Length: 244
Image (cartoon, rainbow, N blue to C red; front, side, top):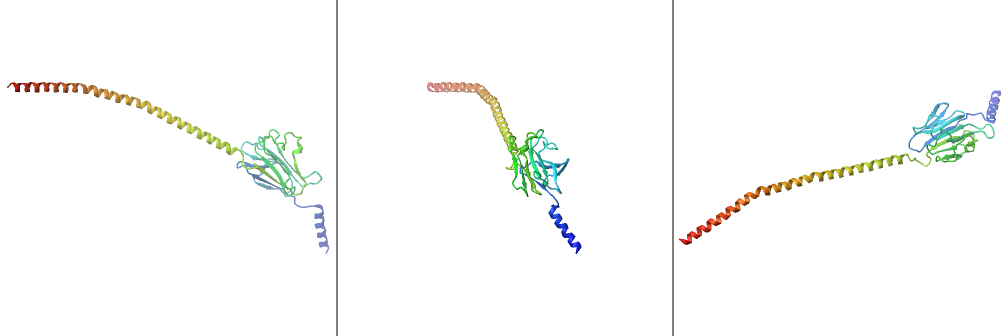
């Protein structure tokens, strides 16, 4: 009976003081079609997809590794986050987007709480966005959530794929244009070469005709003289025949 009373009292105490296992999930949604998400804390990569903490997740960073980012997100769009349950008014989870040097805009990024403070978040879609830290005192760009066990969704390229594929297509089109131009130039060169080659052929044919005419002239002359002589001989024969 005493044991039952103590157990009941412990359950009531735990419920009243809010003792339970705190946890927070950070999930990535990469719509860019390239790159690898990174969630880093204390020099360790926690995940590239989804991570659930046991307790608070403080002072973590995230970014999309495109191949040009430093380990701490240098040269890329950086996300800073602390996921914790509030212990006082104004406490709780907080997240922001930072473009403070050496971080620079690399991909459009959005952050949004869910499982508590649903829909609260922010988005930076261009290098000129006004929703990211530019100076350390731009604290108004932070988004906060004072719900217990809140989770965070990080989306890269929230409107879909970025412009990188379009750039590859332009290069391919340029390459195709260059190939077509080269082919056309080669074809023109071949045509010109054919014309140049055919000219001597015509000359040779002309020379051959001239040679043929020249070589046939003496033969024609001899034939003509022979026929004249034959006609003269025939006339003389006929004349003698009449005299007889």
